[in-house]
Amino acid sequence: MRMTWKRPFNGFDFEGFWDDCAYSLENYVKPPPSDESIASIEREMGGYRLPAAYIDLARRHNGGMVKRNCYPMTQRTGWAEDHIAIEGLYAIGRTSVYSLAGRRGAKFMITNGATLRLASASPIRQPRATN
Image (cartoon, rainbow, N blue to C red):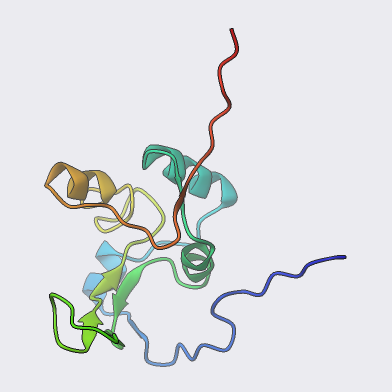
């Protein structure tokens, strides 16, 4: 039986979602990533696979600040009673300030005490060494 893959954001209305102001375009947004650049970034981030939804989103719009930035939650968070806020999404890349491997990317956050959490991220399985 042949399985089909549905793109995670099919049907999502992106109208008014992205804030393509000059700051966002200069510091966040990059061209869509290639398969090779995704694999390289995953290795650089310590061997974690990026979630398929994150890759799909980056292929539509790779990083950027968002206008529609509140996401409802069913339980209280450290942010608010009923939602979290997302200021921007990091590009899959190295050259923008706010890209996963950029100046303020994953390594910067980890070095400065943040925990890198990627929803549905899974470790890349490395082959075992044989003796």
